[in-house]
Amino acid sequence: MPQNTSDTLASLLESVIEDTDGADVHFKLRTALQLLDVVRVRNERISDTLSDVDLDDDLEERLRELGYVE
Image 1: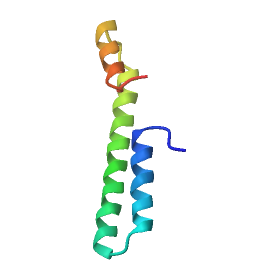
Image 2: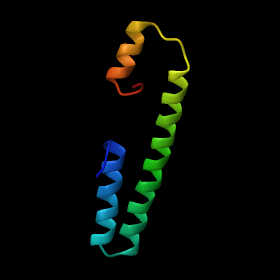
Image 3: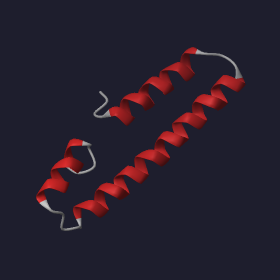
Image 4: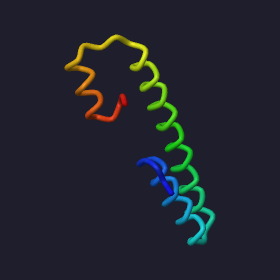
């Protein structure tokens, strides 16, 4: 079962690929999956970087609310 938004999007895109025909549509959906992976990696790097930085409490709380830090 998907655990977060990007996992949910990936699952939805993969299921649409399985349910559709057409090379052009499949190409676009696979491209969307690849772009989703780029965003996922970028967000992981941002999160890792932010976890190594000493943030003031107010900023850290705002970043947590936005989903950038856990």
